[in-house]
Image (cartoon, rainbow, N blue to C red; front, side, top):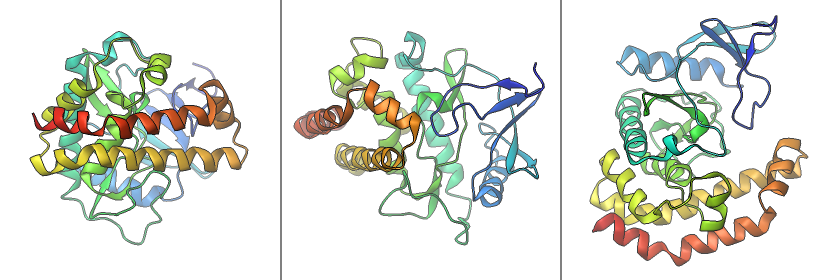
Length: 266
């Protein structure tokens, strides 16, 4: 352990700025930290123990949270993170989060980030960034969610669509091959995620279209970061095929919409 603590890798927004100090994690505090901390405490009070517990804020603008032990998958994602049982556990964990989150009143005075938020809004907070970097595994199953910085009011279906983008993944084969194990069956895995979440028939018929909408929002998020000159996103865009990759990915989603919907409803 150094004077700065153990650096925790993963993620892009706070890359290189997150440290573990014993039982605590210290990281840059979001602007809405007080409201977000209130939400996380409310989750715990209602029995959801699969998220960090806020400890406090430092005078230099950082937040302290409890450290959640386990394994986090980083790209290129290992086989163990993309098994069927791992995918099922992600769907179940997200459902648990949503069922608890629905009982927590949204602080309407807070400035919830709009970067990855549902354009239609909603009456409950969604995580909005359930990517492999933000899921803690224990014994091969998703056990906890971390990094709620992008949490904002939205529909549960939106959060599931965002999650599907990363975990199915909802990427064209060439894009998926860059960081995911080979041979993943996207329609079958989308069905597995929906089943493990317990998605209703009505939402199943809409999910493919919402994934397309979520992908467009993610593209706009990246474009904004690139326009601002963010070196992390500039590098990632260059390394992953530029805007041509996004064009290919979005075209692939539209071309396969009926296939995905059929798999969800079969």
